[in-house]
Length: 107
Length: 112
Image (cartoon, rainbow over all chains, first blue to last red; front, side, top):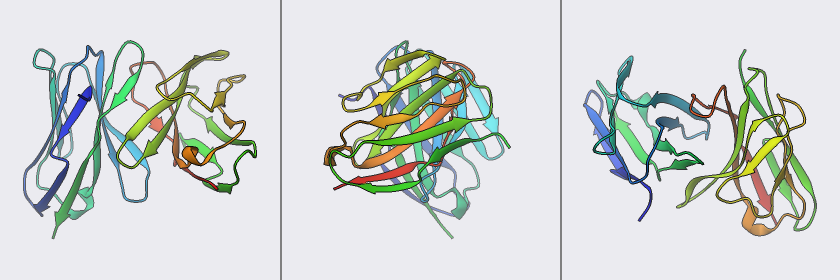
């Protein structure tokens, strides 16, 4: 079993829809990152969380340390949100990545 | 502009021919790392460095070397590349172990 599991693997949404991507992990962590990778390949860090909730524009990230679960929400989705979203957890010795969620938002 | 740069961006080489991929950051970050990304396997950490002259292995260090002689630079060295090292490579830096990481643009390597 992978230490970091993301769901769904693929997601297609209509423009304007509310989107949720989930990340569950099985190891002890000090922080969790949400990353975005566009088709060109570049990776951008969206959030770094150790507790609670963070919001940036239309993006919201939450983490529940007790349940070892994090969610990334996108409100009022737009075609430019189409990308791969990657969850990564920071353990005492390494950064472990999820397999990513491929999001496509259709207009 | 704060950034992480990598060179080259694309490289085609042959088995056994030593190569170096450079990584440089202008943010005075202490922590730097190298990752490879492969279809179906996702991102995996190769090596990381907590500071100058301090480096450690990640999940997949075999076949790679790194050095950290200056704070801003963290080159990745493939002494004798093999086809299984064909991959997309990313360098990243952050101000601390748990802080937000800034990624370079990636280097696509093909080893024939």
